[in-house]
Amino acid sequence: MTSATAWVALLRGVNVGGVTIRNAALAEMFVELGFGDVRTVLASGNVTFSASESVNERAVLKSRIEATLRETFDYDAWIVLVTRDEAAVAISDFPYDETDAQRQPWVIFCVDNATRDELVGMSVQMDAATDPVASGGDVVYWNPAKGRSTDTPFAKLLAKPTFRTRTTNRNLRTMRKVVG
Image (cartoon, rainbow, N blue to C red; front, side, top):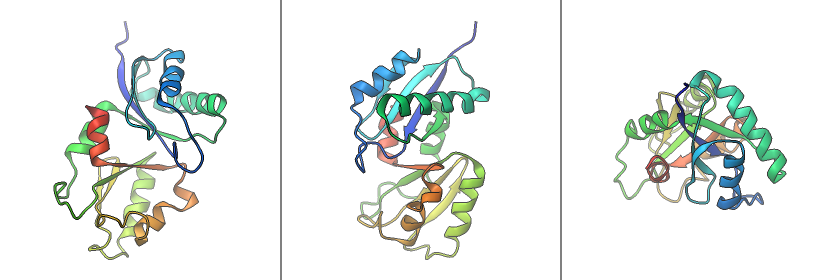
């Protein structure tokens, strides 16, 4: 018997920019796909679930979920799929002071290490005081000043179309709720 893997699906661009998906409908879709322990967290496209697919089957599982999202909700769906354990490590390894009330602790989940390396490499040319960026495992950590998460050079880099299908950002506090 195959044991189930605990997964976290991080949907990009949900409930912003005209793509509205209610959590109940999102959870129902995941249940209809045959997944167990389905739970949606907040209204920003976070779904935890268990599936028989292993880490080695991540690409197939990701494609299946994206195709069903496109079909069910009629939008150009892209997700980053991580295991619950990978998400927990991303949280615990956050390299900045997450209690600094002047900063916003962000985790940028990337579809692959090449994307992570590209973002980190490009950030080297930026002011580290404005855009503190660090590489970590399969993610990029970013810790801009509060209220600056859309107008710094790194924010503008993340907003480029080339990263739309390859990244999704989550506040560290959100991720703590997701992993529970």
